[in-house]
Amino acid sequence: MLSEQNLEKTPGWLLLVAILCVAPMAILQGWVMSVLWRWFIVPTFGLGEISIPVAIGITLFVSVVRPPHTPGKMTCDLLIQGISESIAFSIIMLLIGLIVRLWM
Image (cartoon, rainbow, N blue to C red; front, side):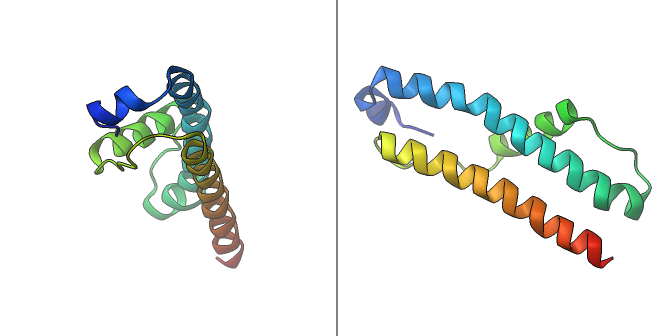
């Protein structure tokens, strides 16, 4: 999370881009979570599947309760890096989950 001082230094257009990127990232992470839930939690614990909106809500909840990352002044490079890392992490987790699922 940006501090007030760093928020004042961040250009408005960059904050807007960051805010607009939150929704697609939440949807991607929610979709990945719903797939992994269906692959591992449903058969292991006998729980029902969760929808993508529920998975998005859980993902958002977890992001709210974990400690925030404070990068300092937000720059375009940091924003691109954060988005890239988030996409890569989601895809890697899904691929690892697929490998484990095929192994089971």
